[in-house]
Every structure is written in structure tokens, then in C-alpha cells.
Length: 605
Image 1 (cartoon, rainbow, N blue to C red):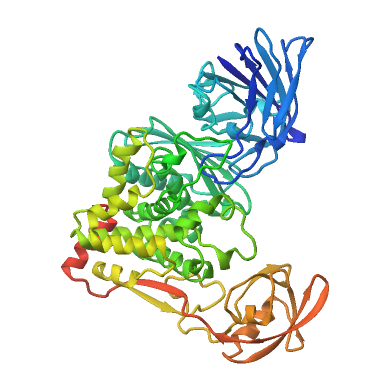
Image 2: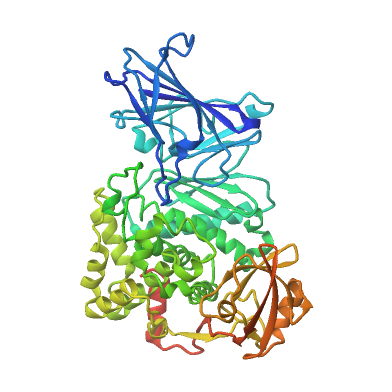
């Protein structure tokens, strides 16, 4: 059995030591490598760059016989021929605070095996053991271990030996070590746990109750057989971090502690808490969609090269649709709150000029070089397959329900994908999801998919929402922080539109992005400019926003900016505030047909 001894050797210097024992190395010389990317995050990350001083020995105890090691490429090592067990020792610099890599300090340890544990070539199917021990620092004896690796001699939540059936299973089991708060519950008889790392004052009883409802809603959607026997949420509370990464029976999540629920929120969840629940819901849904229902090009994962697919709009976009849908179906949020969530998503898309430049299929295909490497012009050149994909999924769901009189829906598609592909461990061919949708919905769905996937045209959500008693309206933003949804002011704020996204940096007016085809772009403003004066008057954040509110469309202004420490003077003619803010509301009186359609959709029928 291949064995990895993971030692938190230098917590203060953020370094692990890994000792890899290979009982039967290749007789022609053993090859080792580390993945260049991690499933669920489609960018080459070159995890091997964090490996320090890799050496090979015949025996760890004496290290008397060192065996030659040659680097073949950036992520592959060739060990010289050797008879008998092979012992590899190397250090890993672990200071990646994301959910994708590895992190170690004197308070906690976290690692994705994908980013740290070398693959033994031609022995990927062999069983693996991982030995986890307490670091040699004060207080570490109180640390616990949270992972879905199978315990061998380790006690529950404790140090010791864990195992995996093969390398593929090994790298899909993230590990959290430290002092964490453990919350356990059952969802439809399946044990679940939430391990929370970080201090907070949240209402954990409410969190457990709400997450349980969301989990049960998704389990009921796909029905038995369930894809796992246990499930683990690894929740890290980190300032200014929000995101997650899915695994087959666990997920790693990061949120600011302010997103935790307060007891006072019981009547109505805050926007932050809804985002937290949506993150739980999103990564949990991935246990079916992506981890088991996956593109054919991911079967199997080859983690040394890019795996291209044009289907990320479905695997991430449909998941992004169901994450919020599960919240309203499970009744942890209200109908009004759900409509606001949709409104904000559509608003965000309408404010993205890049939606007119890139199709969703191209966005999926180019994820490797674009989505995970945004720059100041991303908003003008790209569209998110998460965001637009979720809106396409909404449109498909509504259209299928309309065309089949509620006899079929996106739920039908997901169940079919689960039974035909997920349960049989078969990859979904390119175009298959489209053909399944067209087979259910006929020509109207064919036209919808052609528009949604192959063009950059905006979808007609107004018509699709109408049979459900819902009204979509467009308005101007009321304030700079108006993200869409229910109005928060009695009267709209008057003013003009410049088209620059401002980064509030210590009171300075810093241009973060310039939206295409706006007054800002026509005036020649650039990302990175510092606006220091308008019409020869010095400005800060507060005065900048007041000036724009008090200006009128077609009014000309002089803008003084510093660009690369050089003063530039620009002229801009302001425009009307765009109608890019969406509000979706329920009709005051619904017909029986509208009531039934709404209940079938949001009740999960």
C-alpha cells in the first residue's frame, strides 16, 4: 500500500513535510508527478511550484542510501532504478488561503491532497494510506481532524491513519486540522457534519436547521440511490473571502464571519446569510452535477493537461440556478426574497457589456484562459458561465413547464442525467443536454437554446415569467449600491451616467473598470486612473457621488486624473442612467392557472 506521512513540520514557516513510501516501485525507475489543476477549478495552477527539495532514499531511518532524482518537467520527477521499497521526502510551502491549495500556520492546517501528495505513475489504482499527526507546537494536541478519508486506525475526528481506495479517491478528500466547531445532523437518515474553523457569534442552531432543509430538498429532487453515505462541510471563516470547491462527499467553503446567521435574523434572513446558504446549496448540488454527472472530456480526469468542454454553462450554470431555487423550495427564504435574488442576477448580467461579445459556449470553452484570470477589461469582453448559465437554466425550466403543461421541467432533465450518466459513471457527450431538452420541449426549446447558447442576444424573460404570475420591470438604479430587486427608496435618484466602476480606496476615487460604449470610455478614462478633480474642484468618494447625482444627461464635465503619476485632463459628456436594474414582482391577483404553475415550479413538482 502506498503511504503518505503528512507532517506539519514547520507551522511558523508554513511548511509541510511529506514522506512517501512506495513498497514496489517500477523496476525501470519510478516516475512521480503532481496535478497541475484541481477538479472544479479550471485553470492550470502548477501546484508543483510549492515543492521544496525532493529527495529519494532506500530507507527513511538512516537516509544512508540516497537515490538519484531527475526533474523531467515542471511537475514530474524520475527516480533512478531501485530494488526494494522507495522512500521519497519533500517539503511543501503551504500559504494558499483559498479552498484549492494548502495552508499551514500555528493555528490550523488545511490541504487538498491534489495540491500536495505526489501521484505514483502506473500505480494510481493502488490503495493509499495517509498518516496525520499533531504538529510539534503547543496546543496542537487539542486539534482535531475533519476529512472524508476513511479512518484506518484513527478515531473519529482524530489524528492517525486514514486510507483511500486509489489516488483518484485520495485527491478528492480535503483535510482540515485544528480547533473547529463541529455541528452534526442527519438529512433523510444520512449523517452530515459542518466543521467551522474561525471565531464567530452566529446562531449555529439556525444554520444547522436551514442547511438540513436545503440538503433534504436536493436529496428529494434526485431521489434514491443517494450518492454518498456521509457528507462533510468544511467551513472556514476568512475575512474578504467567499467561495467553495466541490468534492464527491464533502466541500470546502469560505465566508466572512459576518455571513453567519444572527438570532435576530429568524424572521428574515439577511442578504449575507442568504449568500452563505446559497454557497452551501451550490456545492452540495455539485455532488450530483459535476462530481458524478460530468462532461465526457472529464472521464477520466487527466490532471496534467486542460480538459475542454463547452458544457460548463450546464454544469456550473444549472448548479447556480438550483442553489437559490433550493432555498425557496425548502422554505428557508420567502418567495419575495427569491424573486429579489433572480432580479439581482439578471441585473448583474445586464450591467455586463461582455455578454454581447462572448457566447456562453465560448465562455465555457475558454474558462482555462479567461474566467479564472480576470482583468480590468473582463467586464467588456467576457460573460460568466455561472451567471448567464443560471439565467439560461431559469429560462429552460420555465419554457419546459409552459410547453408541457408542467409535465416536464429542468427537474426532469436532471433526474434523467443522474440515472443515465451519474449512476452509470458515464460522461455526458457534448450537445447531449441540448438534445434532451429539445426532445422534451420541441421546436420552441430548440429556438430558445439556439438563442441562449449560440448567440449573444438577451433572453425574453418577461414572456417566460408571465404564466407564473410574475412581472419583470426595468428601472434606473436608485443609488450606486442598488443591485436590483425590490425598491428601497420612494423616488428614484436623479443624475447622469459616467460608466466608470469606482474602487473606494482609502477615500481616493480610483477607476477599477471602464464600461464599453459609455461616457467614460469615450472620454478616454482608463482602469487605474485616480480621479482627483471634476470641473476643477477636488473630489473624494463622497463628493464624487454627489456630483454625479446632481448632474444632468448631456452635461459636459472636465475630469482631472493621475495616470502613472502624470496629470491628464479629459472631457466627458454624461448620458442618461441606463435602464439596467431589474425588479421581478408578483401580480396583485393571480389566476388559478398562475397559482398552480407557481406552486409546481417553486414547490418542486
